[in-house]
Length: 116
Image 1: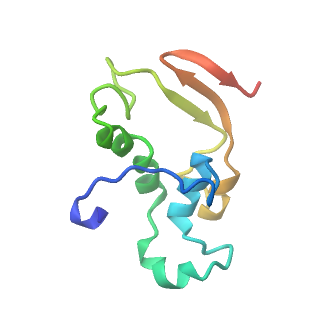
Image 2 (image 1 turned 60 degrees about the vertical axis):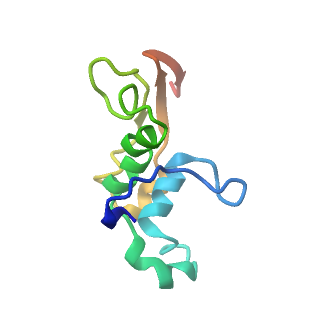
């Protein structure tokens, strides 16, 4: 669908899969490759790059919610909603993405969670 220009947002099949967006990004990138999930045999061509997967949960999620002018990217005039992660998921080995932790969550410019 992405190759055809369809914008899709990230999400989970909770309670089947964990609700954790970091794990969902990991799943979109690896498709069960490291867990030996049989699905990988049939869907390896559907693996996304880490940047493509990140986009599902930011820009594209805002777009499908008709909120692309308010959310989804860090820009002047948009809500300051973002997380600070322990690692750059676009720069680490894909099998390590699931281990990335949220260090801080900011909603409307206010720190709502901090690991320190």
